[in-house]
Amino acid sequence: MTIASPRVWDQPADRTPTDRAPADRAPADGATADHRGLPTTFGAGGSEPYAQALQGEDNVLYLHGHRTDADPGAAARVSTMHAGRWSAGADAIDRALVAGVAGPVLDIGCGPGRMIQAALDEGLDAFGVDVSPTAVRIALIAGLAVLQRSVFDYIPLEGTWATLLLVDGNIGIGGDPDALLDRCVSLLAADGVLVVEVHRDPEHDLAYEGTLHDAAGHTSDAFPWAEIGVSALRRRAANVGLVQVAEWTRGGRSFARFARA
Ligand SMILES: C[S@@+](CC[C@H](N)C(=O)[O-])C[C@H]1O[C@@H](n2cnc3c(N)ncnc32)[C@H](O)[C@@H]1O
Image (cartoon, rainbow, N blue to C red):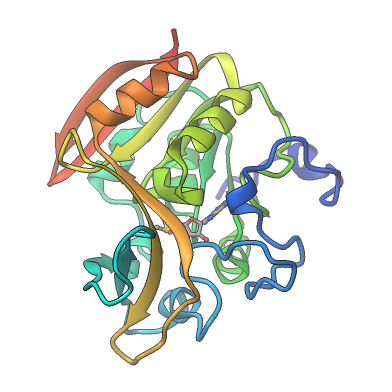
C-alpha cells in the first residue's frame, strides 16, 4: 500500500480557518454535539447512527429530510443509504471516477476512504478530509492520509488540487451547494477538475434539514444537507466560474465533471 507523503499533511491543524461556510463549521476537537452553537454535520450527534453504521454489521441508514419551511407535522422524505458500500472496497463505478484523472486527489467527505484507496491504486497521490472521528480513524488504520476537519477549514495545498471528489451525495455537505462549490474553486488548481455525484433527476435542487436513522433506533442530531441534479448544478457552478465538461450515468448513479471556465 502506498503511504502518502506526510509533507502535505504536517500543517498546523488549528491554523485559523480562512474560508468557512457559516452553516457547516465542525468542532475542531471532533466532538459532534455542538456546544458552540454550530450546526451538526452528516449523521453526527444524538446516538451517532453514522458512526455506529461504520463500525457495525447493520449499516443501512435512513436519511429523513425535513424542509425548513414545511409544517413541523409534515412527513419527512426518507431515502435509504448503504454505509456498507462506503466501508467496502471501491467498485468498478467508483474506480472509473479516478481512472484518467490527475493527482493530487482530494476526496471531500472521504468516510473510511475507499475512493482514496482507489486513487492510490491508480498511482495517484490521494488524500481525504472528513469531520467524522470514526471515519477518519478507520481510514488512518488502513494507512490512508486523511485529515479530521471540515472542508471549509484550512486545507493544505489550497489552490493546487488537481482533482476534487464529491461522491456519495457529498455535494450536500453544509446544505449549501453554492458555498461548497465556491470552496472547491479555492481548493482547485488552475487546470483542476471537480468530480461530483449528482441526483438522477437533472433539475432536482433541494436543501433541507436532515436526520439520520438506523433500524436499531439510533438517531442523529439535525444537520443541513442538499441534493442536486446535473442541470441545476451546472447553473450554480457557472456562478462560481466552473463549466461542466462531462456527465455520465452508470449503474443507476449519475456524475458530472467540472473545470474552470
Ligand atoms: C454521505 S457520507 C459519504 C461517505 C463517504 N464518501 C464514504 O465513502 O464513506 C458524507 C460524509 O461527509 C462527511 N462530512 C460532512 N460534513 C463535512 C465537512 N464539512 N467537511 C468534511 N467532511 C464532511 C461526513 O462525515 C461523511 O463521512
